[in-house]
Image (tube, rainbow, N blue to C red; front, side):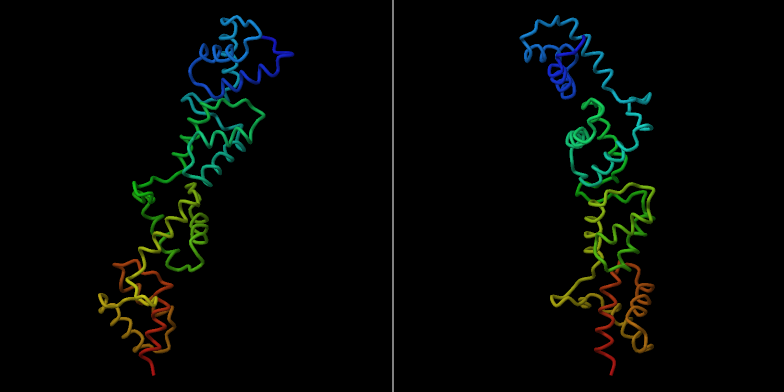
Amino acid sequence: IDWTGLERAHRDLVTIIQSDSDGNAAVAQQFLATHPAIEWPETILVREVRQMRYEMLPPMTRDGRIDWSSLRDERSFLVKAIQLDPSASSEALARRFLEEFTALNWLEIVLVEEAGRIAEDILPRMRHDGRIDWTGLERAHRDLVTIIQSDSDGNAAVAQQFLATHPAIEWPETILVREVRQMRYEMLPPMTRDGRIDWSSLRDERSFLVKAIQLDPSASSEALARRFLEEFTALNWLEIVLVEEAGRIAEDILP
């Protein structure tokens, strides 16, 4: 079909194709219902829709995925959109993408499928409770625990530091910040209301710390905390809490 002078009708047909997955005939019927002024032969229109669908497909790989090799900026945009909003549906991501990249007539149904696949590729496996599933990522988990224990600059800073050391996986920062917050909470020992460690069920641990202070009264709170952490590995102690507590205990027992 020569669409010269029929640009609006052409745009309407493109819109129907992009938002509909019910086949060429259904798209043609929907178009005919919205454009009754012209008597379009349906057989010609169905053939045109088929051709337009084909033209609107981005380059594809043999396994039916979008071939991003010449579309790196487009893929990068989609990856960032997923990372910024990991809970967004594939449809919402595709719509966001289509608003940004208008140069190509992207076929939305193909893009929705691809967005879902990319999300699966870059999101870590998640447990039912929304936490990261660290199975198979034990080393990454240990590294994150280490950063949490030694850093007091907030969850976002810890997440950024982790991302800098683990570039192999494209972790969405929003998920990671949430995970760090939860891990920090789990790593806290039992606490009293005034914000001190509750030693009532941890008498051996407190006794060890007291002895360490008595043996080396000039040791810094950081050195005492490190000594303690080497001895008591059963709990993931949060070092920043332990340093503060060591300082308080030292004040209590030193003349």
